Length: 360
Image (cartoon, rainbow, N blue to C red):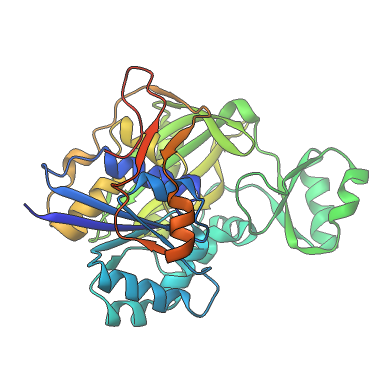
């Protein structure tokens, strides 16, 4: 039986944990799946959802890519996956070195496209330059631009870090007094406030190795602390059409997550691009948009992926849960930095009668 060996980096983050869940629930025709989870800290819970675990260097350390190559070769890893932007940027920046020194596959978009998604100001600029709907915007160190934006749209406005995750550092600005702390900040941008929180959508897209858009899924979402708390799969033509336009213009490789709101004119306006898997990855997989499975089938197994994008309607609600470990793998991992097998430890999560999300 063919064994599929995957390394998931950044297992302490919710996106990488979602990738692990999607892998566990994928259909690989009874092939044995072995997942190695890695993160910068031994107490990252995602590691213990995997079959083996490792402590990794930080992505900005010189040792990161050499460490990655070494573990890929030693463990015969076939594919590296991650939801952490820093990891993606580090590997793509040294793609030639990585590809030369190991047979493991790392699928990501080109560096210039990753930078567009990582920088909120560049995202708006790219959208406007490509004839797509975009929020009016300016940099917070552009005094003239700020005044023009205020004159054009009025308040409220949205101040946000040019780079960042979730809603950290994001503020709704209701007046000039609230704007004062952000004036002159080159690392912040100011955006038009599009619609309201009741008309927010997250859209998943997947582009195959031939550059063909193979599937999309539109989810109406409610947020809590910057992350999706409730997501409903919906049919919203305006959102889907704009997502397809964006995806074809950007031409990513693999996954693309688009966050949009509907404006007062009924136009779907993108305000953020994540050129990677997203936090709703396991939700999407449950409802038939199995992009993680598609990537493994396409690049490792060389199998058709049409059945990975059979989307059905439904609602996902996120809640807090616990993950229980019998034994002390955290201390063992701190000591050895790599645990070849986690089978000697017992893992379980709360089971509500429909199956847990623990390691199978």
